[in-house]
Amino acid sequence: MKTFVALLLACCFVPVHAADVAGVKVDESARVAGADLKLNGAGLRSKAFFKVYAVGLYLQDKQSTAAAVLSAAGPKRVHLHMLRDVDADDFSEALTDGVKANHSEAEVRALATRLALLVALMNEIKEAKAGLAIDLDWIPGAGTQVTIGDQPRGRPIAGEDFYQALLRIWLGERPVSGDLKKALLGQGA
View 1 (spheres, rainbow, N blue to C red):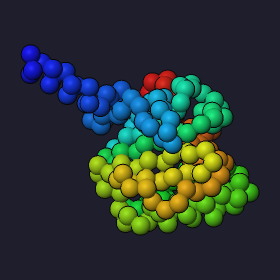
View 2 (cartoon, rainbow, N blue to C red; view 1 turned 90 degrees about the vertical axis):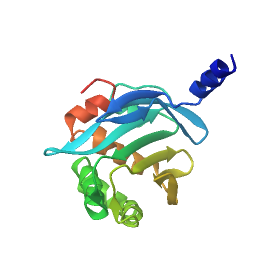
View 3 (cartoon, rainbow, N blue to C red; view 1 turned 180 degrees about the vertical axis):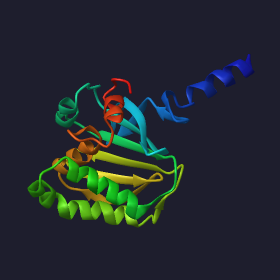
């Protein structure tokens, strides 16, 4: 009986995974700024034949359109799990290119200082190694908190417009991948 109770209790503390993306177990929930978020969708970012990262989008309430995600109130999280080593410069360039692809030149200029802050945070790590977790959290009233390998980096980057610009990398009119956009919106790949 004691063994049964011990096993039952152990099961209560095992993380529950909602998805498996390229061998990465993606948790069904996350806690950001004191709020419990649900996995909205998860997918794989690949480039050419290479699997680059698994990504999960967490929201307070599930949304099925990019517009609904962008306008949703409350904390949000984009969780990236690196599947291969990527130089920090290349990773930062890909993020910047994703923002540029989904915004006008004037909008990119308005985001430039904050994009530079993000690039500086990413460049501190030199290389995003396979297995590394990167969280981009929207914390209302504070900004975008970047966490790399469970360590918050720098101060939050101000402006909800900045976080929305990051979300458009995956959910914009010109996302990095149409299939990934569908997966993050819970529409399958």
